[in-house]
Image (cartoon, rainbow, N blue to C red):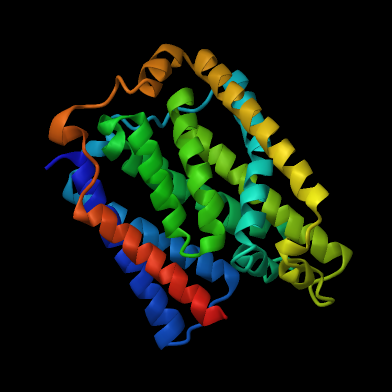
Length: 309
């Protein structure tokens, strides 16, 4: 059995486990956790199947996992890459809100009154480390022999599905793909961890600033959350679209610079041309487990949206 097939089965088990536990705790038992407990519990649920897989496979996939630290100069470019992704995240977040609620702000609203350092630890650092280890680490390593494009797209898709809501899925998918390219360019798993942490940090700090200005009690965050994206004027969408396009192009240029500084430029060019993938069965990703994972994730997100309405 090749690694990509193993990864498909692993993620199918992950999404079934995650959705099953969500149904048991939320729908059947009506359990309500505080925000920090919920984040910690969710990260443990996602990580558990991966740890079991690593034990069963004796950690073979970890042998070539790039866990070395990023040097200072590439790290500065990685931080710039995170900054340039912010408009893309904002654009996709707002576009999704034309159809679905803003789940992120409602979640952060409940933590805005706690110390900022605590919120950063649970809502920014913990997800960045755990999720990047899983998606740009273990799963990406399993799919990598099928080629950079396939492995980036599949792990990005799975990253989006794992959030279990259509609002976050919209931008988590795109960001997940770009983080896979970042890891390839930087040659280090810590690079996407840094970007993931910085993106989460912006959301956490934003919620805290709003709470300090108007207070959660006064409804500031809730009011912003419920403001329909469709009410935004045309000039706003036009300006945001232009900024998103420009910053996305610049982000790609930054990726090129990171690959030069990290010594991966030649390998990246070859991978982007599709010359790095295996042929035949070893290069295939599509299996019933892949499609089953997509079906389960999307079905739960749609049902969750219908129930919320």
